[in-house]
Every structure is written in C-alpha cells, then in structure tokens.
Image 1 (tube, rainbow, N blue to C red):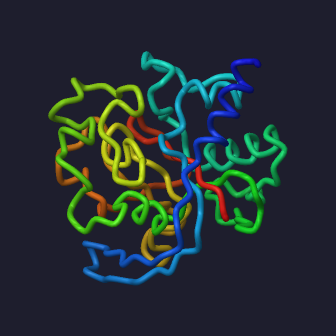
Image 2: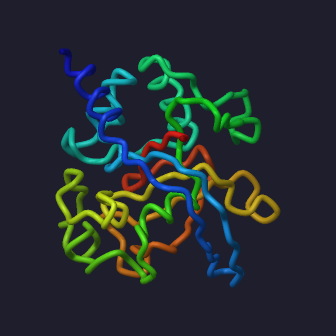
Image 3: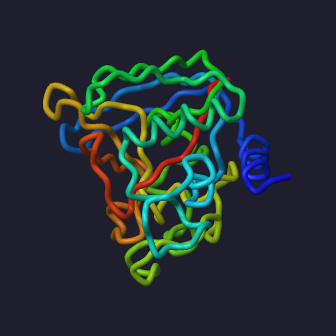
Length: 230
C-alpha cells in the first residue's frame, strides 16, 4: 500500500460518528444566542496534517513544521478545493460546487453528498464540547498547545489529551476553518474559524470563541478538520 493509500485509508477508518443533537451558540460581540439542531455526522479525530495535504495536492504550503503538524497557511478557498479533490481521489461524490468568485459567495455545499467537507461551526462546537458545558473540555495545558506551552510553534497532532468523544486538538495548536459565513450583513463573505492556535492566550482557546476572516486569508496558525455527512 502506498503512503497516499495508507493515509486515505486511515482517514476514512478513523472518522468518528457524532450523534444527532442540538447546541446553543453564542456571539459575544452582539451578545446573541441561537439554537441549532444537528443531524448525525462524522468528524476527523485530528486536523488535516501537512502530510495528508501534500498527499492530496502534491505539496503543502512551505513551512519548517513537521509532516504530522496541522497544515496551515491555507485559505478557506484552498480548503474547499482540497475537500473536493480528496473526495474525488477517494471515489466519493464531492460536496462543493465552486464558482469563479474569489470571495466564495457562489460556493454551495451538497450535504447529501458522501464526500469530505468542512464542519459547520455548530457541528464543530458540538463535537468540541463532547457533552461538557464549560469553557473547554479539560485543563488547558493538558488538552492544548497554546501561547503558554507551545514554544512558539505548532506541534504534531494528537499529542495532547483528547476530549470524551476522542477528538484531539479541538482547542489549541491550530484554528480551524468552518463552513459558515460569520455575519454577511456586517462582514460580507468572511468565514468562521474556531478553536484557538499555538500562539493564543487562554481567552482564544475556548469552545465558544468565534473568529472570522476573508476566504482568501492565510496565516501560520489556521488550518482545518474534515467532516462527512451521515
């Protein structure tokens, strides 16, 4: 089995089934809450690594970080293209229909497709919390690489403690792009990312912390995690 085949097999076999449920999201800026009902879905236990990204795309963004660290410096646009490419290589039906708008306003998601996609932010937070209700699912140093313990760099995935459902690095190491538009009336096409990164202080490393940026934005502590419907 090739390295690429082994990575694809491990990804498919390792996806964690998350049961249907509901969650209340909160935006601290506007001080608003909203409830979201969720169908069952599957989510990868770790963020996409540099080695998986390179196996699918031929190369990963230039970095001194190791192959098992979360891939970063990928835009939201890069990520949806990656999902479609991976789905096609795995013999699955791609979820995304892509247009030519660099602001991604014309991207649509077929949630009935069996391919890989980004989680919604509600799915992300529901999986992150894993039934807990506090700021995070464990003690910060135990579960996350962050400003206080990372040494100023990302670390290999799954080297901190997982949450109760088996998800690693939901808090810290790298922020993770989600599907959602943050607030189109105020921020236009800006997309949500969640979870905190290796250079964040505790306030950024919370299950409820929401941030956003343009779909072309790239930075060295922002990556993504894969979901599938059903």
